[in-house]
Image (cartoon, rainbow, N blue to C red; front, side):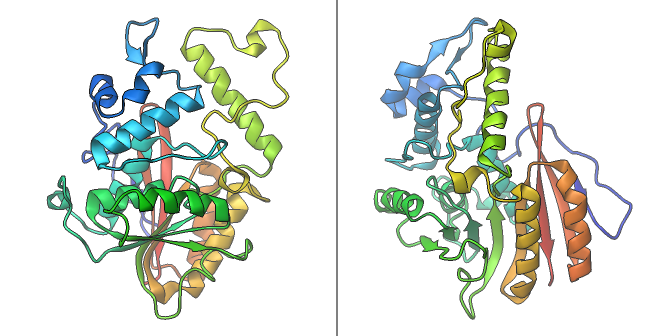
Length: 325
């Protein structure tokens, strides 16, 4: 984790590569045990050209089945499902966010167990989507109490069905509809209510066209990784509507102004709820969006701002965290 503080030139060097030390997925996927837990996964598990047992990560159905198996095997969640077209999150990366947030809150390794002790920590997930993955992991790993918000009623209905199938979630994971898409915290955080932390995976594209182009790049990269030729290298025309290979409804993948404007709105609105939340956090996919966000936070009087880097293979993602307390 690399943490940068806004009022100091010192920088803590990265202490590790790869997933957080508490992450259960550091050793990769144990497909035999996953198939044992969720037999439906077996139809997607193949031996690739390198002789390794894996799945086709360009196939949304395969990724969905893998996630269902992971959640059942490692987190005791049954009947996890998402509707067609919804964002299918990579479980190891989502778990990493929760572990880094726990570290931010000062929670040590003794909190981790197969049956976590219930905690007073309260987490708010902005844009929980149809998968509800961050609260699910926070509840199952740390025993936190969570609220998931979204502007899409159908997404929340899907998460409600998942909660109903898992008694461990029933009293600790609540859902709230954001009735005004122009607001983020307003209308969700109630008067007199307090959260220890908020999390968010903001829509990172500014339009559907941009989202589709990003998906096409993913498809091409996956094809190259498999040693296949992409449509571009074959000289054939790219699909006019490439599959969003990890899914993603409009509210999940894109919004007007993209990630930069969403972060700006979130930061400005967070100031209005400064006394009702200890830490506000968000994933930031584009490094260019970090500096303007920090500049705005300083202007608004944030007392501590941290940029936390997470490494997943060669990919670096960032958490921006800030507090006014």
